[in-house]
Length: 370
Image 1: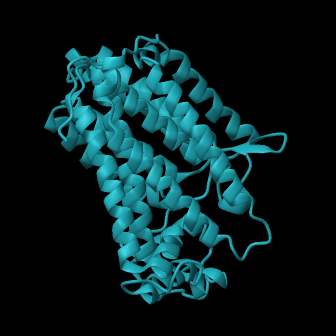
Image 2 (image 1 turned 45 degrees about the vertical axis):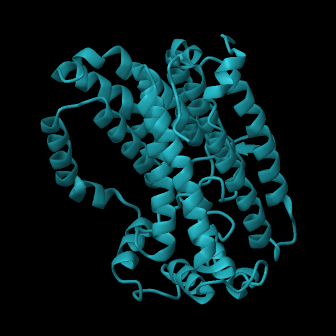
């Protein structure tokens, strides 16, 4: 279980860890700015506690041989699905966020779907590893798809379409990396396009409005399109250098809804400008590049698949969040990794980084180009 040797630290990816720490610090500063006008500073404290706890989890995971996770993939998968079933009956949040996605134990609240993301990546990576030799046989592929999409169906029942899209994306990337034949990928794309009319009629009114507002940003600026418009105005007002940290007019006067969570990038754009956004994107690129490097050099399918799934999850969050804030994607309520306020989300992100670092550290023969 703990078979780490001193020489193993020559393989440790310090650049990945440092980039994540830099992102966490960046996030804490921007959450501080976003919540400066609030009566309470609990958001900063919660994020800081989650970050510190996450660093301890990373330490545990890098000392732990990740092969332990492969032996626990069935219990992890079962617990994930049980949590999602409990949410359907005991979950709250539909009145405030439009989905029953939260569970509360006393005063402590968390989103099970966030933990299910990493749980499904682990269990699906192992399931793909077990079936890799027969992955392109129709029955085996259907079995893998059923295994992967059961949690997605439970999330859609909440209903949380935004989170479900994240799952679909990283599942697709993991299967693509597992060398699923192009004919099956083409069939999946055709089936997905054919199902769009059915999915459209299953969307709630607020979800349809988000799509309409994306296609026509000036359609309803005072109501359903208000958040998107204010975010773009705030980013545009920051220009190249920004208005200055803690000096954003739209940020400090609360013109941007959910500025501490989904629209944190609007705060960055207004207060730190184009340069602040570029620095953030560069940090993300470093983080993703190092994780891809570990995935490519991993000597087993399980470790490589896990890393690929985690990269895909982060990539979708980053692309969708920044895209929806600047008007290139519809609003889906997807938070920005390490930047958006959310204790559960932050902890899950740190767990994912710990898993990737463990893969990089415990595989014999893994080297890094400096």
